[in-house]
Length: 156
Length: 264
Image 1: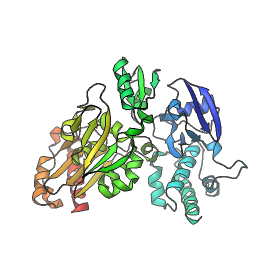
Image 2: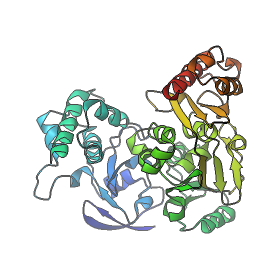
Image 3: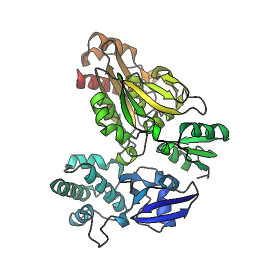
Image 4: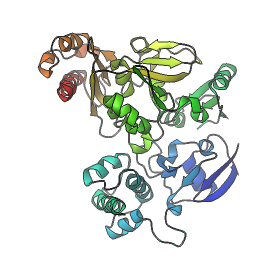
C-alpha cells in the first residue's frame, strides 16, 4: 500500500505491506534507528514517537495507520540548527541516562509531558512515566530532567 | 505477524460491508489489544478494517440527560474532556487510569468495551453507570452486554458506534492497579442515581458484574460502613498468578468502601 506521511518535517512516500509496524518502518525503511524497540509488547516505551503531536508507542501502530499524518522521532526533536529541545538539554544537564537504550522514548515522552502539563511536579512526572521502563533503573536523573524542563515551560 | 488486507473506510456502512464480505475480517480501533494479539498470532484475520478514519465515531457530547461518547474516542480525550469532567467526573477519572499516557492516546472506549477484557476498566464504568451500547444495528443495555470472558452480546459484524451514559448524582471509581500492566486486579464503580445505587466490579470475575447486596445496602445507607461484611463470594471470582479469588474478594470490599467514602 502506498503511504505518504511527514517524518521530522520531510514528506515521505513509500510502498509498505499492511503488517509493517510504524517502529519497523522508521527503523528499517527510513533508517531512523533512534527509535528503539525494547519489549515489542507496548510496555517499555522505548519506541515512543509523536504522531500528530501526541506520544504513541510505534511498536503498536501499523505504518499504514500513519498515512497522511505527521511523525516526529528523536532525530527530529532538536532544532534544524542543532539547538537541543529543552527536554534533551535537561537530560544532558541532569545526566538523565545511563546505557541510553530507553533514552529516545524517555525524551519523547518527556517532551509530551512538558507540552501537556507545564510545571509538572516530581510526583506527576513519575506517574506520567508509567509507560516507560529504564533497565538501568536510572529514573532519578530522568525525572529530575523532565521536572526541570517542565518548569522552564511553565516559566516561558 | 501474518499479513492481511487493510481497509480504511470513511463511513460505518462501508466498514460493515467489508466485515460482511470478507472471510475473517476484524475491526481495528485503537489497536492497543488487537496489535499485540496479532503479533502473538493469537488472531490471524484475513482483513483488518481500520475505524480510525470515520469521523462520525469520534467525540463527546451532551444529549438530553445523558453523555454520548463516540466509539473511537481515545482514553486521553475522555480523561481530559471538560464535558466529561463536568458531567461524570468518575468516568474521566476511570479513563485516566487506563494503561499509560501513550496507550491512552490510542486506545478507544469502543475497542475496550467490544474486547471485554475481564481486567479492563471501562466495563465497570459501562455497567456501573447503567450505560447503553449503541451499535450500527440496535441499542444494548449494559446489564445485557457483557456475557462472559471476552464475550459480549455483539453479533458477528456488528459495530459499536457510541456509548451513552446516564448522569449519576454522584459516582466514584476505585481500582487496584496491577503495577506492571496497569490493568485492574480489581476495580469498582459505585454510582448513586438518587432512586437507585449501582455497584459494578471489573478485574475480579470473567466479566464485569454487579453486586446486588452492596447496592441494596447503599440504597438504605450511603456510607462505607454499610458495606461491612458484604464482600462478594470468592467462589465466583478469578484466581490467577497475580491474585487469588479470596484476595480479590477482599479487594472488592476495600475498593467499594473507598469509592463510597470518596463521595459520601
